[in-house]
Image (cartoon, rainbow, N blue to C red):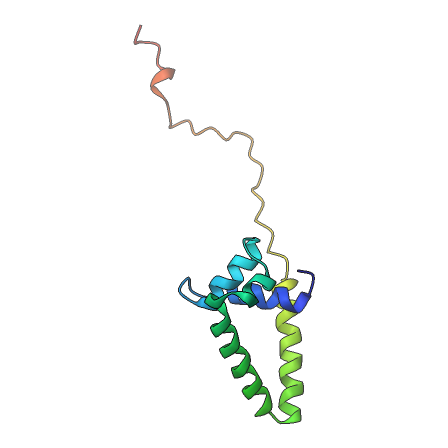
Length: 115
């Protein structure tokens, strides 16, 4: 799947609990075990997809033009956050030490009085 928005939505859905039907579907698609084409033909997912699409249409229809623009901007930022997250903070570097061996620690093999 090369559509950035689609990938972002799937990644978001995949974070849902294991019992969530849409989350399960997203994890299946992202893992490659199924495709979106197969999902659309699946009776297991079609009801959940239809319900989610209808809910989205109702929400969009209820918005004012200003709310739609704000939602689009938030959506673009959310897509960017999912697909292009900030790089992780670098791990702290350990200062070099002259001697790393703890002299208080000895192993049984260090003592030669067993022979």
